[in-house]
Each structure stands twice: as C-alpha cells, then as structure tokens.
Length: 302
Ligand SMILES: [Zn+2]
Ligand SMILES: [Zn+2]
Image (cartoon, rainbow, N blue to C red; front, side, top):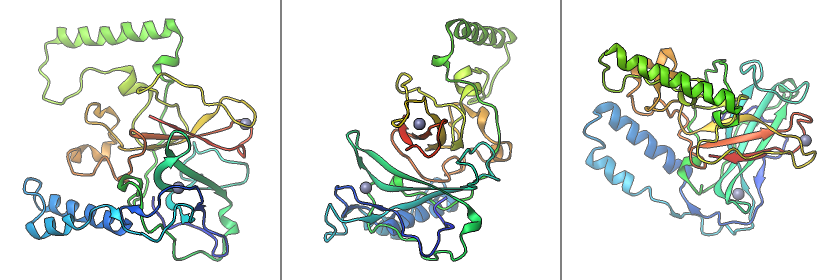
C-alpha cells in the first residue's frame, strides 16, 4: 500500500486532468504527521491523548488553500494506492500474462456526476520493468485526508464468500432466516452467560457471506443501498468486483472475521484500519468486465 511502486522510470506518471479545485485541502505530509502524532500519543498512553506540544502541532495542520497557484484545469499526479502481485493474491484476475496490478487515484472525491473518486488501474508484466522510478510523484494537496493511504503491507488470506443475501433466491433466504432463528433459540436455551462483546448471534450477513476488509474478487455487499446492476459500458456484461477498498479490516460489531493472529490486539488503535483509507461511505469497489478485462472498469460505492 502507498508505494513503493514498480514503475518504469521512462513511463509518464498518471495525472488527474479533470477540472476541479486542486489547491484546497490537506498537505499529504501534514496528513502523515497527524497520523504519526496521534499514533505515538496512543501508544504512550491510550487515555491521555496528545501532549500540549503535540496539540499545538496538530492545530497547525489544518486543511486550507495550501496550493493557491494550482488552477482547476492543471494536471496533478495521482496518488499511488495499492500494488498487488497475482502470485500473492490468487483471486486477483487480470488480463492474460500480466502479473502486477497497480491502483492509483485522485485524492479528491469530486469526479463525475456523483462526485466520487477517479481511479486508474494499471496492469503490467513485472519482468518488463528494468529501470524503476525512484521518486514517486504526489499532489501538493489532497481533498480529503482519508484518501491518503498509509504505507503498509498486505497479508492476503484466501477465504470462501457467499453471495449477498438480497441477491439469493427467496427459498434460500427463508432457509437462512430459519437457521438464524434456530441459532438464537439455541443460544437462549443454553442459558450461557456471554461476556460483553462476545459473539453468539451469528448471522449470514455479518459472519458468513461477505467479510469486511480489502479484498480481491468475491461478492459485493449492498448493505447501504439495494443491489444495483454494474454492467460493462462496452459490452453490457454484468461486471464483477475485482478489488474492494474498505475502511476497516473488521468491525467491532462482528468479530468473527478478525484474523487469528490479530485477536489478542483487537482494541489496539489502528489495528483494523492499517491503510487509513475511507472512501465513499466506507467501501469502494472496482468492477471489471469478465468478458474482456481490458474494457473500462467501473466504480461502485457503499
Ligand atoms: Zn481529480
Ligand atoms: Zn465488457
């Protein structure tokens, strides 16, 4: 996440050429400094928060017109977001022969009629890159701090998902309802006392079908809106989620997806949000066309 990127030194870096305000927002360095200060303060003492001196620094990191000379039509470099190798992420499906996916985005949620992100998806053959770009460009200002990913390394885990409940047939939905009720009855009958926050109310939606977190492939959750078709603009085929960008790796309301190695540190600040990214209302999905992976991708938000 967030670089370094295997990018050829002689290949132009993708730029946002859309017309929108580009000079007002946060400086990327300020975003990183604020995160570091808050993280260090928490690690020192979760109760006390930042020191007086740190609070003074934080107060100076406000968004504003930090690049007054940037005109709305000026191109700005996109942010390096994610770089994934197919060998690390088996469910990542790209065009034949390509082994590396690079995702970049403009850090202003202002594009198109829905005022969302603009994302560039780049597939490459890693062996073609010999001379690597060392200085990754970045914009002077970002529209939202939550568009800036924090550098971190992904540890992919392969799991089985099941379709979003609202897209299952009626009979299957009824069976799931009945099964959830049985679980609940059994839990009540057992009379077992559960510690606060302990899970006993398993549900299909939260614990079996679609996990939280970044992922490649799988199904799309439609918990905020009703399911909406995402069809290819070139050929009309129903598209599939290639990559889901999530604001958190697990939710305190449903801990069944917490990786075993993270269970001892569920309450640690930032543990479920290693990327610090929050797009849309928590989820951005990059859909691709299963008929032809070179057809333009589409974005969907929840
Ligand atoms: Zn833009
Ligand atoms: Zn298509």
